[in-house]
Image 1: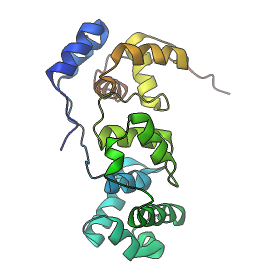
Image 2 (image 1 turned 90 degrees about the horizontal axis):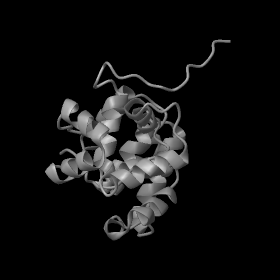
Image 3 (image 1 turned 30 degrees about the horizontal axis):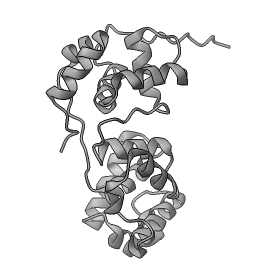
Length: 214
C-alpha cells in the first residue's frame, strides 16, 4: 500500500505554487509505502531510530520472520530479551514492551486515536516512551495517511525547500509561510520535497552556505 493522493491534491498545489508545480511535472507520481496498522507502524519507527534504513529493514525482517504478526501480544510474548535477540537495543526493547503493555491494558486506544485531530494524535503519541514529535508526524503521514503533515524537524524537508526556492536557510517563520501555502495538502508537498532532497532532479542544488573547513 502507498500513500494516497491524486489529481485533487496535485492540481491544488500546482495552482498555488508554480515552482512546486514544475517539480511535480518533472518527478511524476510518487509511490511511498504506507503501513496502516498503527501498532506495527509505531514499533517499526522505534526500530528505525538512529540507524540506517538498511539496518532498519534487516531488523524488521528478523522480527516479522521470528514473530509473524507484530502486535501487542507477540511483543509482550517476546519480552525485552526476545526483542533484543532480533538486534534491537535494550532501550528500544523497553519502549516496545511499554507500548504493548499500554495497548493491552487500554491506556493507549488504537481505535479511538483514529478519530483525533492531528494535534491530538501527536500529543498522544509523544506521551509514549521513545516517540518524539518528528516520529509522531511520520506516523500521521505514512500510517494514518493524514493529508496535511509538514514537519519542521525533518531535515530533508528543509533541504528540499532550500533547493526548490533557493533559500540559504529555513527558519520557523519561512517554514510556516510554505505550510500555509501548501495546506490542506502539505503531505503531498512533502513527498515532492523529499524527492528533490534525495536527488530526483540531479541539476538542482542545495543553497545552504558551505561550512568552512577547520
